[in-house]
Image (cartoon, rainbow over all chains, first blue to last red; front, top):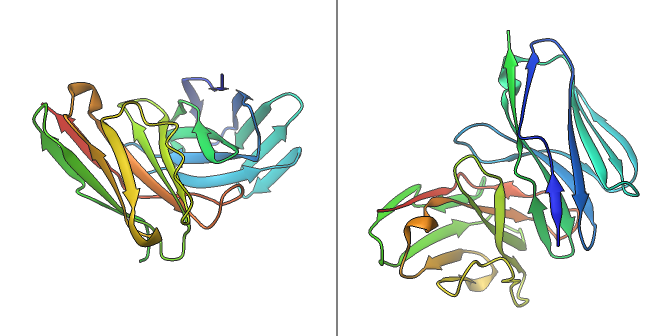
Length: 108
Length: 114
């Protein structure tokens, strides 16, 4: 089977740093994506990793370890608008498999 | 177009009726995906189209679900004899190619089966 696991909910304080973890077990691997989804809206692309290591893009960074089947999304200098669900997705051969998402709440 | 367009945005139907959901991908995108998202849940892969190749239907939950893509562009997802458990948001996404292609999502169709 294929599993993509991430925490259901997280809470953090405005200005802080939060790390959202994702572990996966899939039959193939062509890359790992992180998407952000605000309530009632469509997911939007945040980051993509295909090689091991850290990809940095402004306040957001994403890390991948293919041998461990592990990724994390790091959000720095949290803002209230970062309150959203964060979806980990693995591109596996011809399709994309999504985790259930992590609902992040940023508090003042 | 500027983005992925889906219609209708909302659809309320009675149990047992058929529904058709439409997706207009971004012009030039060869890959098109359909997903289903139940309230508070992640995305469930339904079907994938790549160019003129036969679609990957491995995610369709039952034979009541079908999809087609005409001319390599517009796609229609059809649900026959709808059931209450079909109620969800149906999202369409397109990308330039498989593998590394970033998926761009439409706003979705919220389907409610009464």
